[in-house]
Structures are given as structure tokens and as C-alpha cells.
Length: 443
Ligand code: ADP
Image (tube, rainbow, N blue to C red):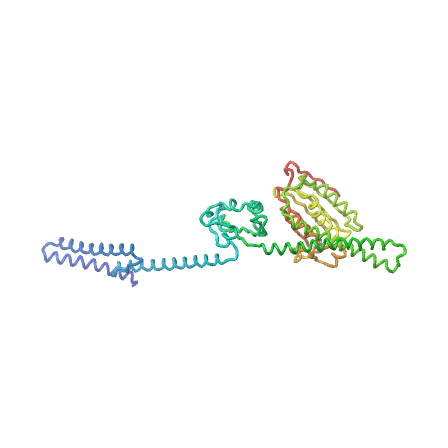
């Protein structure tokens, strides 16, 4: 038999014994019912006393020992004691965990701020307080936008695309930079991670300056060398044996000039912030111009099509956009054999404006695609050199697109061709898409 069942039988037995003793006493005293009533009253008083001790102990359980009662009352008390111990154990574990969490977040080299769905500050660690100059008393409950008013950060929050961090300069004029990244979690809450990237930014600036200065310094001597090579090449008295080497030297000097030009452009793009605004660009006219450039190449794919499916204009920096699009079209021309074709397509939808440059060229193996926009990254170095590539074209495209809030998508199949698509946000379109839709094609 189960101990609990046993205990109930025991309690029932005790009640029966009380009834029997009461009846016995009543019979001896000559009043059966009075004896029974007295015995039951005593039993009830005993039960009430136990209930009272139990209630008193429950109220003072943190410092008083549990009452020592047998039977069903003892079992109830034992159950309560067990529950109480379990609760205390979990509470202690929770408090310990919280302390550990607090200590570890305080020791984190990065700042952490917890924001609720309304973007109000719920909690922050010590490092976040130092980096963002937050005060525990005054700033808890404040909206983060009211405390961090840097335009880059406000734009980042509004964009809702938190895949990359944003770098801000909290105190203008000083050489300090903070990297901020938002990680959404739970029910609309946000985790804001803050780190001091001043050192990295300074090193980056030193590297950029070095590359820009070296490129500028190399440009002048190279111009002189190219000039002399041209003069030598045109000299009728030039030894015919030297014609080949001089032509090769001119080709290499041209390549170097191209690399230096691209390096200077990259340094310039890296130096400046995101393009805000800009002028509306007639994409159709720009693509028509790029088509002419391809057809003017000595060797080019036999078919070059332009498809304009939207009259929406692109708002941006015209020379930069020209440079980005021309790099994509140039690549398509370089890496497509003469029997292949190129198609440039411009269209707009609710997601924004899109420019795709598709070719039926050599294609790119999938493992190279994620690294294409790295400086000097070439899939086939020999082919790139042979076509006069600097390895910087796609790095320039990536930077220009970043500065316009756009992104590059690359699709390619080896041996079949590639498609490079620039996706611009709707804010970069000059005219409402619906009103301006049209479809033209130039072959
Ligand atoms: P490059 O000046 O060498 O063309 P890019 O940065 O423009 O440098 O391109 C990087 C590499 O990506 C190229 O070397 C080439 O291997 C590959 N690539 C770029 N565009 C295409 C394309 N349309 N088809 C095939 N390969 C391409």
C-alpha cells in the first residue's frame, strides 16, 4: 500500500477511534450523544490547532522550523517544506546566474544596450555607459534616437537592415569612432552592440593615405615614361627588333596607368561618406553611351542590347554611377567571346531601381563569387591581365553602390555567362514608377 493511502487509513482510523471513545464515554456517563459531541469537538480543536501552527509556520517559514506533527498534517507540512526548498534552490540559482551574467557583461570589452520595442533603453552595461556617455538614472527609459543623434545612426535605424554595423563619430573633431550594430531578438526587442573602432579607423586612414599618396607619386613618372615610349614607338629610325618590346612596354605602362587611376578612384571613394541626394541621372542615355563604348572596342561581343523598362531616373553622383556601370559593362565585354552577347537592363518596382548587366561569357566558378569585390581579386589572373584588367573594377563598383545605399548581386554559371545586378532603394528613384513605366529595346 502507498504511504499516502496508508496515512489516510490511519487518519480515518483515528477519527473512528475518537467516535468510539466518545460513544464509550457517553455510555458511561449516561448520555451517548454528549460523549460523541465532546470527542468530536476535541478532535476538531486538535485539527484547528494543527491548522493554526501550519499557517503560522508558512508565514514565518524563512526563519522558523516546521512544526512537528504526525499524520496527514505532518505529510502536508513535509510537502510544503519540499516545495519551499525547491523554490529557494531555484531562486538562488537564478540570482547566481544573474550575478554571473551581470559580471560577464560588465567585463565585456564591448558595450551592450538592451532596447525594447519602442527603442527605449531597458538596460546597458558599464562599457556602453562609458562609450555612449549614458547615465543610469537619467537615461534608462529614454529613446535611443534622442541620445544618439548622429545622422548615420538615425539612417541606419530607419533602414531596418542591420546586417552590417554603422560607424559613427560621436564627438566631431576628435579622432574617435564607434561601431554600432543592432541585433533584433525576442518580441521586437533590440540588442545594440557598441565597440570603439578608433584604432582600426586610424590604421585604415593611414593605409588609405599611403595608397593614395603612393598612387599620386607614381602617376607623374609614369606619364613621362608613357610619353617617351610613345615618341620612341613613332620614331621611324627605331630598330625593327625593338618594335615588339617597345609595344609591350607601352601596353604594360598603360596597364599601370589603369591600376593607378583605379587606386586613386578607390581611395577617393573610401574617403567620403554616403552620397546624400545627388542629381537625377538619365539611365537610358548612360546605357546607350556604354553600349557605344563596347561597340568601339577592337574586339567585342557581336550583340549588345539595352532594355529600358522604366523611365525612372536614378538619383546619385553621375561620375560615380557612370564609373560603376561602365566597370560592369567593361567586364561583360572583356570576359565574353566575340560570338557571345551582352544585355543591359534597367527596371523599377516597389523594391527600387535595378540595373542588370548579363553576358553569355566565360562565367565564374561559384567559390569565387563571394570574393569578387575584393581588391586585386581575379578569378583567372592571366585572362584578366591579358584583357588589361586592374582587379579593382568590382571593388570600385561595390564602393559606389554602398555610397548610394545599393547592393550588388552576382549570378554566374561557368561556361554559360554571368549577370551582375545593382539594386537601388526606392528613395534613389526620381519619378514614381507606375506613372513612368515604359519598355524600349535597342539592339
Ligand atoms: P578586372 O580588372 O580584373 O576585370 P574586376 O574587379 O573588374 O577586375 O573583376 C574581378 C574578377 O572577376 C575578374 O578578374 C574576372 O575574373 C571576374 N569577372 C568580373 N566580371 C566578370 C564577367 N562578366 N564574367 C566573367 N568573369 C568576370
